[in-house]
Structure formats: structure tokens, C-alpha cells
Image (cartoon, rainbow, N blue to C red; front, top):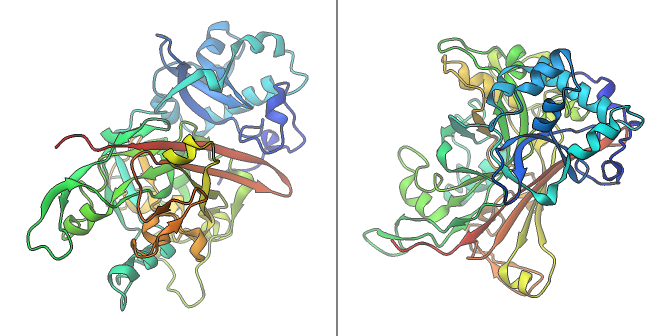
Length: 439
């Protein structure tokens, strides 16, 4: 488990004034990593770190040679167009660089004058995926989501017998993962219209979002070598926001017997910033099961998980329709939940993924599955919020929604906060739905 150190000190302030603003996602205590370049330029993509409303250019920082030792070695790995090698270097390398950056960006740092010219406004940057994603696995780790969705299709038996025992997942499509800000066209697929006797190929009419947490793998494990629970977090680089867009009518027709396919593989959106596990250390909370529920099998259970295996990440979904933008109306919040309610922890998901000897590689991406809470207002998808489309939502603009319409922009936001620690955030994972392309 990550431990608190000097970088978490709530008294720290940065000479980058915007990093000290109340409510900022990117104070000195965060320092998440991304891949970026100046917008509209022909520059190479390279690593950057968020500080306030700016990006510290790690490629330029390496060129001026201000860091040394392990931090400099880690910094060299951030000069590339993907952070796979940096992620693979392990928590010691990222921790060394994070500590050096914290000191360099701290108020009173002797490096301030040298570093000011290396800051680029985030508004003037364009972002790329933080890593080359070799594989993407999406879990189903919210029991509230699983129960709500199961109840729509199996009212008498919403949870299948294996759910409480197995971290359920499916293998997604890594090639269609895109960074926040990129739009996508409404997908086509086979659907079975109500009352019909044969399916048809059509653009989905039941397009949905899924509010998820993404997990980037750091250190790899060799094929045939499982990762014990106590070592699982040594293989995690950091977390991001993730939206696994879903075509619910396509999904309803195709998901049996093998599960998601075209209903899921057309688009997945992730936030550009990856928050390290070290930065999240102050926001660990106990992971527990209700007393009446079965405990996990031994390979998924230990004292450390029960003591601090969960993370209290606040999660929100916001919707901005084309009409709202045209009328100058603010986006509307649709839901608010917490990752601490997940049935499985990050470590448990990773350990189960490798228990059969499956090899995870640096830069691989795990999704948590839709994160919903017990309350109706904490539902992480429209499928839940509208009871499968039977109860439309009325928006502040006067529009209604059962599922997403063309022009809708969905924004996921996440943050951690506590009385004794500085709030840190994940930025935003946003994308806009475009009209379907001709079949």
C-alpha cells in the first residue's frame, strides 16, 4: 500500500499560483501525468505533469538537465510519445520523480526561475493517450449497478450466482480507446425491434454512457506467473476516469451467449491525466463486505485490503446537450457516486486477472465497470437512471432523455477530498455524440 510522505503535506504551496486555488483538481499534492503537445503544433508528443491550470513540459525539463539521480532516469522515460516505459519502471521510479517535481514546484524553490518558461497553459495543449494500450479489460465491480441492471432483465433473480464470488470482466477493444475531447459517431449494429421476428442493421437508438474508473498497469507480470494480492498494487501505475460507451439495444440482442461485442467496442473515452497510486494514498478507506455476505476466497482477501484497500474517489456525470450549448445553459449533473462502494478493489481485480497466469503488460488498461451507489441519484448509466428507458429524465433545458441524442456531450469528473488533506482531482473525460455514418 502507498504510504504518506512529504509530497502529501497539506501545508505545501506552489509558486504556480493557480495550483493553490480552492477546488483545483491539480494542486501540488497531486501531480498527475499525461502525454501532450502544444495544440495545433507539429511538435512531438511527450510527457507532462499537471500543476494548477498549466502543464509542466517534462521533455523540456529533461533537456535543461535540472534533475539528477533516480528522478532524472525516470524523467528521461517521460520524453517519449507514450509513458509505457515510465509506467514499467515501477513505483520507485515514479515516486522519485514525483518527489523531485514536488520540491521543484514548491513555493520557495530555487528552480522557479528556470521552470516558469517550461509551463504551458492546459488550454493551449492537446492531449494523447498516456500509454500505448495493448489490452483493455472491463470489469463489472459495482454490485449496485449489477443489481439494478439485473433487475431490469431478471426481476426475480437480478444477481447471477457467481457475482459475489468472481470479479466478472470481459476483454474490450483497445484500439477504440480515445482520450477526452474526441467525438465519435453513433454506432450501427444488429438490433431486434420490439415485436419483430427478425433483426435489422440500424444505428443504435439506445446509446448510453458508463461511469467508470480506469487503471493503468505499471510493472508487467510474466506469462504463467500470478500476482499475489499483497503485491498487486506494485503492478499498478495509476488511475483515470473512463467512459465505456454502450449501445444497449445492440447489447440486448447480441450479449448471449458470449457477452459484449459490437455494443461496446466502438468507443471508450479516458481522461488524459493519470493520477498515481501514491497521490491517492491519503484517500484510502477500509474495504468491507456486509456481515451477511460471503467473504471472498482466500486469494482475494487479506488484512491490508480490509484495512485500506478501497479508495474514496467521488465520481460525477454531467450532460451538455446541443440545445443547452446553443442557449448558453450550464451542463446538468446527472449522478454522483463513490468508488469506495465498489464490490472489488483495484488489487483484487488485478490479482484475479492474473490468477490463471495471464500476463499483464505496462500500459494495459482495466476498467472498473459502471460505478453506481445505492441511491437512485448515484446511478452511473442512463439505463439505470431511466429504468431501461421507461422513465425519461427531464433536463433543465426542458428536454427529456431516455438515452443519448446526437450532439449530447457527456463529461465524467472525479476527485478525492478529506478534512485533513488537500483535494485532488482527475480532470475530465468528455466526448460528444455525432450522427451515425451511412451504413
